[in-house]
Image (tube, rainbow, N blue to C red):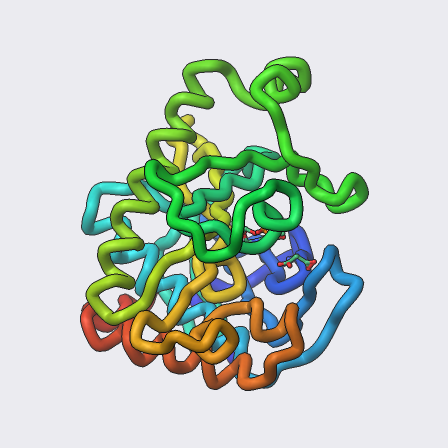
Length: 252
Ligand code: TMP
Ligand code: ASP
């Protein structure tokens, strides 16, 4: 498809997205791929339609956060699996907020899956695939000089605001936001914004009206656990979210 503005050089290829320069310095184009990976890409598949679903879900969620006053890199959609965003210097920290115990927390700690976490738990991981994205301590963060203490405070604040906003939105459509991962970045003017994507690849979402522990999963755990119906689950998330959100804007 033709993009306006035109895409240029490939800047970065991740597991689920490609990021391109455009003919404008203050814009980059993000292409959402159909590739699915898990366990640091040990498990891989192509899931037809996943890219477009995640692109649209991310757009709806970024716009929702924007309405709540949470700054993001998102500018607008372009076609069904592209979005235009502001370029950011990504903070090499994966920011995870957990409302309910699941996933790695239950593998690493004596906490049963499904245990509510009140207040929510914030976990920070060092974003480095070669090291397997290890869990950070505050002392390690400080030692690596990844962020200043003030920036860490701003990251915490933003993470909990994102959690509050998304949790309420998903609750409105019968979904429990179990946990999620976001990435943050600094814009050219030094503003800290939510970047990357927010989708069923990066959130755990459970269907509230379903008690079966596998059937209720509407996120990438369906792929991680070989449960099938991954694209259908993402489609269900999109259908519900778009039922309560305005149509996402097209850039330009
Ligand atoms: P975890 O339980 O595996 O630590 O995952 C916590 C949340 O972060 C969950 O919603 C899935 C998301 N996540 C990612 O988006 N990317 C990743 O690489 C990992 C490991 C988790
Ligand atoms: N995104 C990570 C990977 O591909 C892990 C995950 O989401 O489970 O490997």
